Amino acid sequence: MSLNKTCAVPERIANITTPRDMVTYLEGVRGERGQSPIVLRPTSTQEVALCVHHCASHDIPFVPQSGNTGLVGASVPDDTGQMAVLSLDKLRGVFKVDLANRSVTVGAGLRLSDVNARLTEHGLFFPIDLGSDPMIGGMVATNTGGGRFLRYGDVRRNVLGLTVVLNTVEADILTLGSPVRKNNTGPDWKQNYIGTSGWYGVITEVILNLEPVVQEQETAIIVPSSDAAMLVLLQHLEARLGPLLSAYEFMSEPAMRHAFAHVSSLKNAFEDGIIPPNAVLIEVSRTTSKAPWDTPLDEVLQSALMEAWELENAPLQDALFGRPEEIWALRHALSEGVKSAGPLIAFDLGFTRDKVIAFRAEMARMLPQEFPEIEICDFGHLGDGGLHFNLIKSGGPLTSDYELELRDWVVEAAVERFGASYSAEHGIGPKNIRYFERYSVLEETQLKRQGDLFASRPIRKLETPK
Image 1 (cartoon, rainbow, N blue to C red):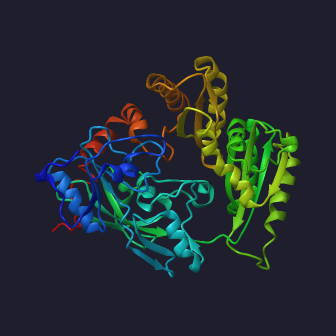
Image 2 (cartoon, one colour):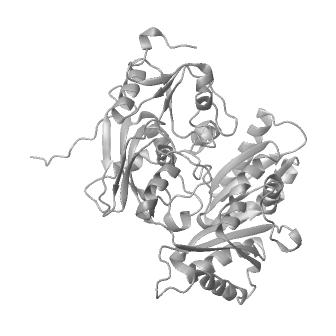
């Protein structure tokens, strides 16, 4: 494969055209594969604009690619061999900390671990907790949430401003938002580029809100008395612990079983090693340590759980306490454990919190009847309604027709009967595009396709009518 000579990129732009060197840019985390004639690797916002202008001028389709850690194939080129990859991995030159404002301006190509490592000396961090290590640009483009959404919210809540190159021939560069947190002088235009997967433009720099590093945390794994009890316990802990409650993650027995089988170093602390039908990881944390007014967090958590035991129809049967790194090791091993168990069909669904419980009950009843080869291995962020609904197929290979039938059946049930989002935080991509077309309202779809309102023109300063 090669680009037509008339479409050669500007010489100043680093690129890769050798097939063996492009492999990591053409393969997704869950086996997606595409083809591309070139990987563009600009080093600045201006170079991104050159790339976008060049591609638009020569009708070369391109896909922006950040850390390529997404789970719906959105950053992998298609299989036509005509789509360029616009990688952000060299946009690493910007890192400006504003300690007084508790914010930082970063290049979109910096990874989450890079940002937090550089902030350690200042006692600050970017408070989005993920199992993978994505780049900041992709986190903003997909509006990631993570395990501590309950405390800190999603990326959208923590972005103060950004720089974006519009997907037009002009490739206009817009600077939207600012380090100022309170600004109601007009529409918040930056929101149109957060969680829209690069639809309107390529994010190159971001101003992030920072939080003080956690100084004290305690964790426990709770065995609930029933599925419904998980929500009862959550409401009790929120009322008693307030902002100290930073994570509330549920894990199903099949997901935990596969994690223990896949990761031999995991410690099974359940009584007699018997894994319960469901378990909940609870974390409490704070940014102060040994302050005179602070009760030790282990006492706080144990007191709140003791109160829960005294409630009518106590919502918990058992509580296992341990070091946070050991407790979280199980939660972080779930994805790899499920992935190793067999052909995987994964869904990232978002519900109101009560509907998570109802949906799971419906699936446990109906899936074995409709798809008897399927094992449900789900887990998720019950505190914010997010459900990683993972299905493992046994008894033969996973065909594309079977997967499509299963996906349609699950998504239809989730969206139409339980009011769910078919993409809580993983974005659209090839896995979800058919549901975007099916469920997005006509007006919204037209706006996204045309981009006339948000993206196709530079934003001009408003003038007072004369």
